[in-house]
Image 1 (cartoon, rainbow, N blue to C red):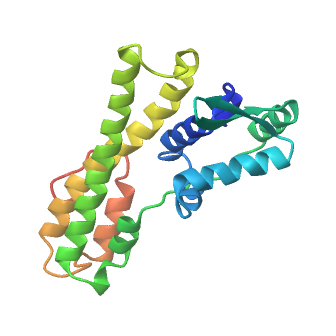
Image 2 (cartoon, rainbow, N blue to C red; image 1 turned 180 degrees about the horizontal axis):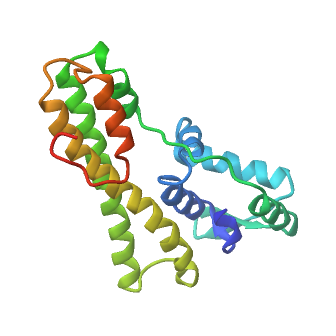
Length: 204
């Protein structure tokens, strides 16, 4: 989708895609980085060219060659079709959450470590968006004419990450009071789920 903005050098496509994929498109990013970000991104670009969705041309700067990619009319039509199609359900991917879900098979220390990792990850993600805001506030952000769209999505993701940070602080307090994994009873669990949307208490 970086190609839809402007004719872009191969490396710039990779950097632009990586910044957005870091938060939006986890599965795509994993597939690309599995073979290395640069080579994986180039393969995707070459597939787009073979499909007629993009074109490429070579430019030279001294002895350095670079490939410039640009979207075609067919590519814009395909992008428009995708934008108009119904989206999939939201996905949440976190190995730390999965480990916590199966926490009864480990120790309380393992569970607390997973909770802290979830909170630290959310805090780092929130900081990332603030860094992006700082960049644009300083007039240094790329494609400022479309930054409102980025901000719209960033606010949603930032709010989710803020909620995750608050949850992690609460969950650590709760699990720290347990004497064994999954120590609370069913009644407690039902009450916790019913309380969704309410402020977190000291112990649920």
